[in-house]
Length: 369
Ligand code: ZN
Image 1 (cartoon, rainbow, N blue to C red):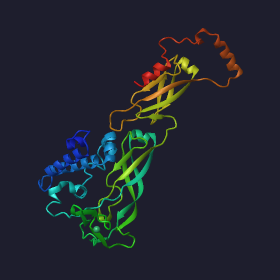
Image 2 (cartoon, protein in one colour):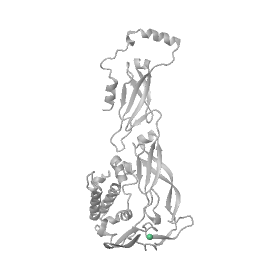
Image 3 (cartoon, helix red, strand yellow):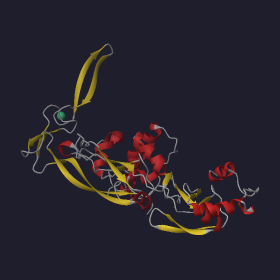
């Protein structure tokens, strides 16, 4: 099933501001809250779908990526991994629990302290043109913080397990209570009771892990894919952060890319240009044979439809433009000079551009239409 547009899920306009997004999500979260809809799996799906949309649209960076690249920009490549069922109920309550207001944590069955989210992990991935054109799956080794086995927890003695430290301040308006995230447990409400020797104060160890990253076709230099939940583990058994994959593009030796289109400079010798020929040109994958008509002028552009790069959101593919140049020999033997001297006098060798030979200006104009 195709993933729904996040704006449609929340029922808001693309121009919606932060407050609109929060309001729309709160309404849906309360409507489909599991406490109100026990044992209703379709309500649970809607609850999760709304949380996923809210997670992206409430985060400026993620929202920008989503606006630009759609679901593909979220690392799903059409909904395979990462997002799309990526959030479980615990994630939702730990991250957005405060939005439910009166619902609180669901009748006290859920702890008031939150599960702390791990930090995001950033990596760069270098791709060649073929990987970009067809999409690829990369297996990459990353070092990340993981929760060690055999860690046991106590209640944080600093905040008493609430994850927050409340202070009462006397002001001219009277006593005011302020709450801040507990600096000792980062809001988790826990402390480490026992940990293996190699684990740090958060109960974590640095570990090498191979992650599989699905890269959709059509990505480009500088684009960042977001793989949800593949970053560092959250301290005190919290939820993992995200893996942010920044794309680097390896330059192709012959084909130049501009967005979805590719450009190739073809050099013909003037015999082929005059007499016509069949010439082999490189494609992203493999080669193609193209027909050069007799009397082809330098500057002509041949357009190979669909042989460019697919649009990252699946809106078709670009073209390959073959720019024809005619190569002028730079050294000549005496024999060649003799032949060319005879040709110089020939009537057919006098330049005689007709109105139908398009000017440089016209060709450039047509290319950008
Ligand atoms: Zn604490």
